[in-house]
Image 1 (cartoon, rainbow, N blue to C red):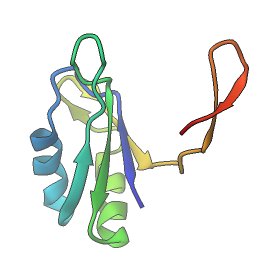
Image 2 (image 1 turned 180 degrees about the horizontal axis):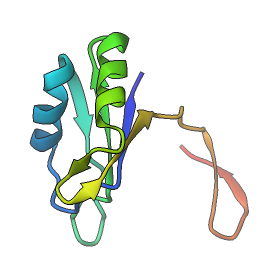
Image 3 (image 1 turned 120 degrees about the vertical axis):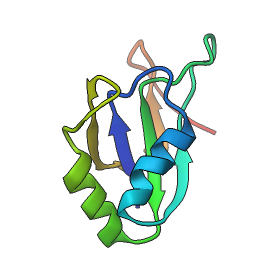
Image 4 (image 1 turned 135 degrees about the vertical axis):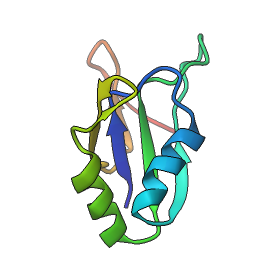
Amino acid sequence: MSIYVGNLADEIKQEHLSEVFNEYGNVQRVHVPKDRETGLARGFAFVEMKSEANENKAIAALNGAEWMDRDIKVNRAKPRNQERTSFAGYRYNSF
């Protein structure tokens, strides 16, 4: 499973998230999506931890916490759909 972390500062880096989440257990992977044009973080990230129990501890402790002058949102990531909707409302399949 994966944890969604939202409302993050633009300057956030994978190392920052690993350091914070390691307090609740072993972090396996951190993914911080970047804006294509600016190269800055898009304001959210995904964290995967070694055990679900550690993920639950991290979610309980960090959801709503203030970090880098922002109240972060931390919860279970929703599974990604294979089908997406474009801005115009037309559906297409991602490849």
